[in-house]
Image 1 (cartoon, helix red, strand yellow):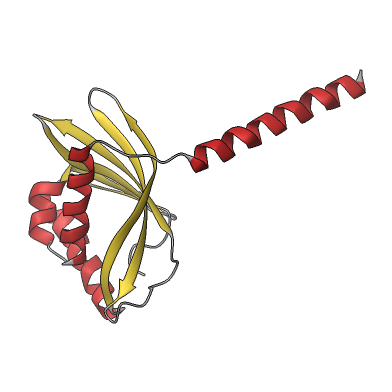
Image 2 (cartoon, helix red, strand yellow):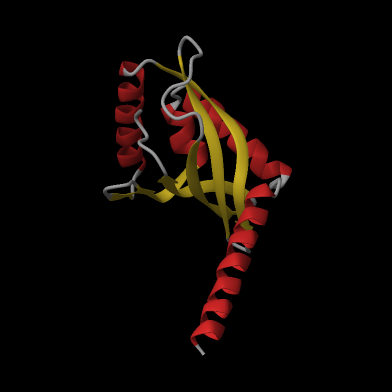
Length: 160
């Protein structure tokens, strides 16, 4: 009985590990409109363009699930304050720009898209800033044919 249970658990663990490995090797390619949306977001973020992000990219309410806290902003002014503070801190840290490396997960239904992006940040001199491979998960809301980010889950510190 113990031997059978051990054998069963071993098979389950082995199968689970194989599935995880297969998922990591998948080449996820989101629809072109999603890729274009994130290319624009990346450009606006790299340029510190608060107004474009507030008006065209983030949705309200906007939530940030940081490693140690959760923030929800219900007004453009609150989002503007968060972005201004973040970009000021990035500037103090000599942030230059970000590059999207790949997409790690993608789910879509009628109203939402959940996507995980792998990216690299660079200093102004084009050397890598911090971890080479950073991740962030986004929840996009579909509204009247447009996409907007309604939640962000950074898997590392935003301001570094």
